[in-house]
Length: 313
Image 1 (cartoon, rainbow, N blue to C red):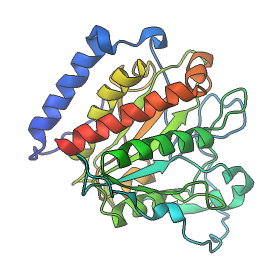
Image 2: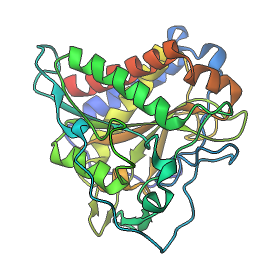
Image 3: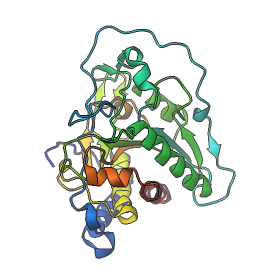
């Protein structure tokens, strides 16, 4: 890929190479094939968010930068930021996983607040975005909460402590810098931000976004680049197996992986973290999957399997 993202070897090097080999095998094996999802695709992840919930933009890019901003209203802390689960014994006992449901169903009612600029280390960007939607109006924020709830249940069953950055229980947000801070403060063993994309018809499939090497201002990803790649590679391979979806046919060169340096949620993270764009809400075939409760359960299973594989090393 056209990135100069090389980093020094770490003690995870062997597991990383094994995970990369697993993805290659999984993408070519009959049991991991894409079925009807074919060249599955999603729109290129938005610059710090997932586009807008109103129909058409072919991409879910955030609104243009604004200089006007209103202070964040004081809101009660989200109850979702408290760890849940972890009482059960299992392979993930003693591990903490943070799930970050992309966007917020009520962001659309607080456009001034979410357009407020926040520092992401390399620049300043919108606090959050509204997210995209299917042409029939199924919002990305609803999708991400549903998959996140399913994912939480699966991880708790394995004994993990699970923290959600929000649970639709706050008026908007949280902002991208706070989303990163929640994972950092939890000292999470892994963080996954759940999204769906909003690209052109014909763009299909999923992709996992990995942090690139960034060192600017409050951002320093030097310690998380390689473990995050390991986490993301495992999620990509096991997402294929669980869902039958193919890697994106428009982002990542059919690898299912993309490296970004412009997302505050990754730049400001001090713990291993990735984003996953589960499909393209603007493509009718992908939208049919994303709106299916059965497929969303498979998506949650694939993400959970990837997290478990990473944490169990």
